[in-house]
Each structure stands twice: as structure tokens, then as C-alpha cells.
Amino acid sequence: MTAAIIAGAAGCTCSSPEKELQSIIDNTVEKYEPLFKEANLAYWNGAISGKAEDFEAYSQANMKLTEILSDAQTFSKLKQIKESGKVSDPVLKRELEILYNMYLSKQADTTLLHAIIQKEMEIEQKYSGFRALHNGRSIDDNEVERILKTSLDSKELENVWKAHKQIGKVVSQDIIEVVKLRNKLAVSLGFRDYYDMSLSLGGASPEEVYELLDEVDSLTSESFAQVKKEMDRIFAKKYSIKEAELRPWHYQNRYFQEAPELYPVDLDSYYAEADLRKITIDYYASIGIDITSMMDASDLYSKPGKNQHAFCTDIDRRGDVRVLCNLSNNERWMGTMLHEFGHAVYSKGHDENEELPYLLRDAAAMFTTEAAAMLFERQSKNPQWMKHYIGISDQEAERISDACIKSARLKQLVFSRWVQVVSRFEKGMYADPDQDLNKLWWDLAEKYQLLKRPDNWDNADWASKIHIAIYPCYYHNYQLGELFASQMHHYIINNVTKSKDLRHDTYIGNKEVGKWINDNVFRPGMLYHWNDMIERATGEKLTAKYYQEEFR
Image 1 (cartoon, rainbow, N blue to C red):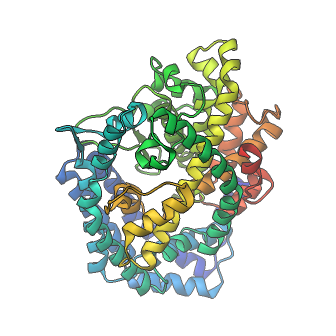
Image 2: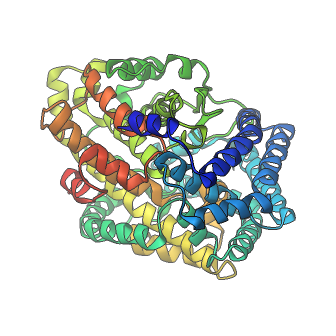
């Protein structure tokens, strides 16, 4: 269907507005494409090195991209074409929608746009260079996570947790400044604030997103409250304290965004000697997707100055796709590898669709690429998958099966509550950046995560989360991604593998799975609106019912 539509467009006799639009597209892409690649390469280099000159090169390339898209005359022509309603070709119509939004987001004073880019670059550099100071030495995020997960000393847990949160003091005022700059941009373009603009230009109305978030909240609140009580009983005993004395540092990670080890299975022990790189290559190959070239282009291990997080980047929309990780041999990083290369195979899929115009070589929506990443990430907790790739016995797989299912459910419950906090915090922050953001953050954490805020503590803990500063208004995509991942899984087990095995199907060795997801989700890129793509792929628009079925 995709190829037929594109071929039809290529052979059509375009009307005058369509010819003018095609000319604008060609001229924009000719200037935009090399700078887009230059910016992505500079960011990649900066993320690895932490060097100021790399971030400056990224900033400069971004400013040049902004200059292209801020051209008022071109935007005026696009607006006229859009309002004429005379573009009937489906591919050109979609390109117009994408390009119009790209230009709209930059129709502001270039001085303001450059100020935003410069401030974002400064903040990014501060995050890359920060290391928590604990017991007189600098430690990276992996070490912070290790201590939080393994120490039984409440005082040590508190100290390392608070040490990590010191980045908030370093960047919080910068973040508030850039929030106000972003809001100024959004208001100048007719939006209520930057949050409203970001969601709207991303192809989903805030009302649409919050209807889904509210639905997930109602589906998870009672179940989470029950498991949180169980968790508190276990942790109070583990740390030899009263339940009322439990604080955020007792939940085994920096944000309580990941499920703590609550059930009698130490997943990390199974991955202690595993070759995470090889396993990732082999798994994707088994479903018919070759990732070796992308793996070879990636940077997977920690080094001084390097970004401590994980991400995937499509450098040029022509197949140069790379992943950054900081691997340790544990389940979290196994899941992260599967996740990030889920993003990578999505990018590879639309990049290799040569019939797809350059402007449409991206995910249908931010959350659809998250969905692909999450679909594959889930395998790292699947005993049947672990049996195949790390060699646990049938008996061991059976022994840990129930605990793994419970752990997977716990992961979803914990993460869904965390998404509620971040999404609603950002919505509130952009609505009023001058309010007491430290209080807002903990009000939300208490409500949705049922955490107790630290005593006598007034710190910008919200600013320790890099997404809030550098990847703004994004977090809802993770929850929508989980919904779509469950919807895809339901379709695959019923229509592709036909196993109907909701809990255990791994897709291993079934190349039809890779073909289905590539043909129906990856290759179309942005050709269709995200909900149209989902309906074409699965027969239904996005729904939470399969997420509830899988993790209720």
C-alpha cells in the first residue's frame, strides 16, 4: 500500500500549488539535509567526548538549521498552499503537513531561537560533565545505581542519593531560563505555552494525550497502591527501619522509575558473564533484521566525559544509525541494548525505504519508535528468551517464571506512575515556571508514586532528570509507547507467530515477525498520521486495553 501510494504520487501530474510545494520541498531539503547531518554528528561527538568545542559545533549547526526554517517568505507560501486546499496528492499533502509544522515552530525572532539553542547547549554540557561526589570521590551514574541497589546502610543510601541530586543546583536556574524562552517562542506562535505547542506540533493534542494518561492512571492506581504496600513491608524489614521511615533512596534507583527487586529472582546474576553486544545482534538476526553495521558504528562503554545515559541517533536519514550506551553486565543494560536497537531498526526501516521522501523518513510519532524499543526490551525479563540466549536450564526457567512475570508487571506499574509525575510536572512547569517547582515535584511524587519527600530538604530534584531540560515534553511518549507495544504484541501472537502465548512468546527464529513490523510500522515512516498507521498495522487505533490485558 505504501509503495503504491508513493508510486502514484511520483506519476501524477501536479497542479500549480503542488508544483510550487514540490519546489519548496526540494529547495528546503537541499539546504537542510547536510546541516541536519552536521548537527547530529557534532552532537554524537559531544556526547562521547564531553568537549565544549563539539557542543559548540552542534549549537552552530542547529542555528543554521533554524535560519533555514525561520524564513518568513517561505512559510508564507506554505501557509497559502495549505489554506488553498489544492494539494490532493496524498504524499505531498503529508509532506506539506510535516514541513509546515517545521517552519511554524521557527517563525519567531531568530535572536530568541538562537538564545534557546545556546542555553540548551550549555545545559547539555553541564549534565555531561557532572559526576556525583560520594565519600570524597567522583562516581558515575552506574556506580550511583549500584550503591542504591545493593547497600543496606540507610545513611549511605541517603548520602549517595542526595549527592546525585546536586546536579539540580547546577542546572535548575538554567532550565527555568530556557523554559521561559521556550514559552516566549510558543506564545509568539499562538500557543498557550511550550507544552501545548510541543504536543500539538508533534501530531497529538494535549487533550488526546491526557485522555490516555488519565485512562492509564485509573487502570494502575489501585494495583500500584497494593504493590507499594507490599514493597514497603519488604523494604522496612530489609533496611531494619519502620515503614514510616522509608524515603526515596530506599527504592533501589535514583527516581523510583525502575522496578526494585521485590521477587525472589536476581536477574542481574544471569547476565553477569553475558556478551550483551553479541546477544543483541543474534536476537535481531533471528527475526530477520541485521544490525551489525549499526552496532559497529555505536559507542557502548563508559569513558570520562561521556554522556552517561543511552540513546539512538539517526545521523542522516540514509542509514547511518548509531547507539550510545554505558554497558554494565546486568539485566538493566541488557534491556537497554534491546531497547536502543529497537529504535535503531525502526530508523533503518524507514531510511532504507528509497521510495519514501526525505521529509517522511522518521517515525510516525515519537511514541511509535518508543513502542518498538519497548516491545523488544521486554524480552530481557522473559525466562524463555533467557534460556535461549544465556543458557539457563528448563528447570531454572520454570522456577523463575512466576517471579519474572510479576517483575515485568511491577516494572510497568512503577514506570507508569513515574510517567505521570514527569508529564504532569512539565505541564505545570510550562504553565507557571515561577511557582515553587521543588514543591510541585514532590506533591506529584507523593500523589502518583506514593513516596515520602525527604525531611528538611528543599532541592531542585526535578532538575536532576536530564529529559526535563534537554528532551522537553517527551515523557508521555514512553507511556503511549508501552500501550502500542502491547497492541503490537497482541497482534503478533495472534496473527504472525499465532502462538497466542501472551506471557512467553519471544519471536526467536521467526523472521515473519521482523518482516511484519518492518513492512507495517518501520518502512512507512511518517507517510501516515500515527493513529492511521497503527490502525493499518493492527486493525485498531491506539488503545490501552491490550496493555491492561498484559499487565493487569
